[in-house]
Length: 332
Image (cartoon, rainbow, N blue to C red; front, side):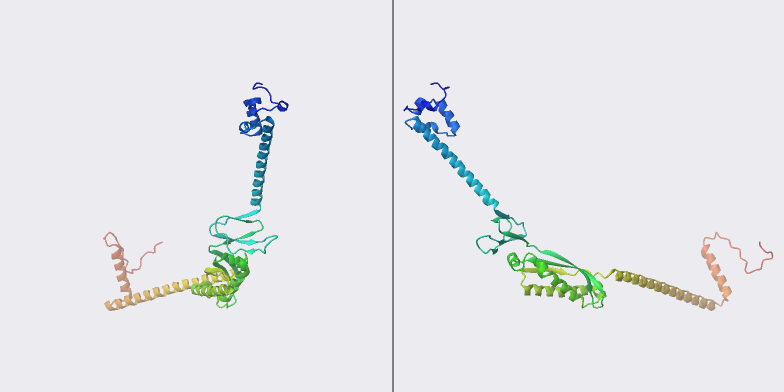
């Protein structure tokens, strides 16, 4: 038998030889390559006949398939477990509160420990609530808030709160803790504080706004403590008071009229001062005329001469004096 001969199973019947005596090495290597068994030559050399060699090859082939099947089952099992998990990875400044909701065993509930920034795997029946742990601003528009004089004004109130314990917050007050516990109470506090003061005081005086802020801040801190909310009040302000548009227009018109009155008063005051100045100068001129013994006509002539001297100080002017003479011919 040469290396190019084909190995047939019937050639092994009734013969007792070693694998190396019957099957050339090249054919053995082809069998090993076909069955994906690299150690066929070594194992066959330890057997006494071809039948035992083939039996060993079949056992190794089945062993290889079994290992492959086990690996496939393990891989699919791991994939199924991962597919049945929930993944939570809160960012910096956030925490996730886990709420267990098992289908079969256990009573579930809120976990005592929250998930910090990172990544956590949980059962797919477990829900997570994201809680922002940094100071957070809540804005409230308050329209038609009545003052003590019955004028409705509006506010843009702002409160900044920070969560201190995310687990206690979600467990006792739920995800909508601000809307359900603080929002309406905060509005009520603003209304009560504004109702004690008038519109002009609230809209203009910064002192009144500071007093309103302080009153609401103290009331809000006391309410949070009494309610047991695990949050901290960082800052609070009611902002600027905005009266209705009709009141604004009237105030603008009133301010315009007041400014006009002040302008006229200033003009009158200036004219009175000018009149007093002119009268004082006239009295001074008359006293001077009387002191030098001139008649009013002579004093006027004196003033005219002084004016001419002032205008023609360089001596290049020529004046024609009439001295009050009546002309002989009419000038047409």
